[in-house]
Length: 220
Image (tube, rainbow, N blue to C red; front, side, top):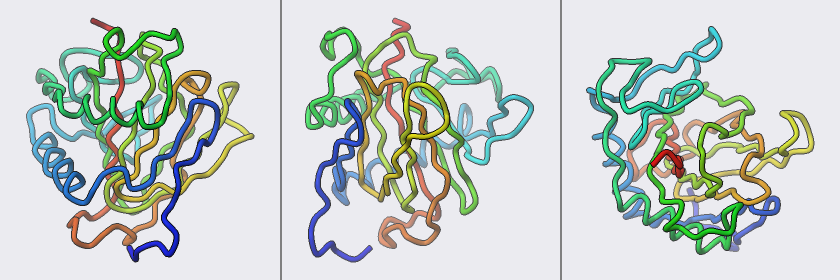
C-alpha cells in the first residue's frame, strides 16, 4: 500500500477502545505471519468452525486454550481432538506493549501480572469471508483484548455493549495495525462486514487477511 501523505494517528474509537495504526513494523509482520503458518499446520491447526448449526466463513486456530462455541478447552474438542498448541510468551509481551501504548486498563484496576495473556485466536479471512457482530465474553478475566492485522485491509465494525445494532463505528484496519479494547468497551459487540481483497502489502506474500486476537482467559 502506498505511503501515507499524512501518517495515520492513534485514535480512540470509544472509551477503552483504541486503534494503533502501523504498530507492527514490516519485520514484525513477517515474523508474526511466519509463526501463523507454522501454527496452522496439523495437529491442532487451522479448522472450520461451526456455530449454531452454521459454518463460519473465517477459518481459525487457537493457542494456549482452545476456543470453541462457547467455551475453552485444552484440546480441539470440535476438531481433531489434539492438544492445543502453546501460547508463546513473546506474543503476550507484544500485546502488553499495545495495551501500555493505548493506555487501556483492566476493568478491575489490576495490572498485567494479575491478568496475564494466555490465549490467541488466529483467524484467516478469504476473499468473501466476514465476521458477524459478536462479543468476546467467554473469558473470566476483564483484561483488554488485543488484535493484530496482517494482509488485506478490512472494515472493522466496533459497536456498543448493549446489542448488535447501532450505534457503531467502522474502522479501516490495515496490515500492521493493532486494536485494543478493554475497560467499559471490553464487552462491546464487534465484527468484520467485509475485507478488501488485494489491498495487502505484496511483499508480505499473504493472500487474504490474518487477524491474531490475544486475550487473558482468567482460567489459571
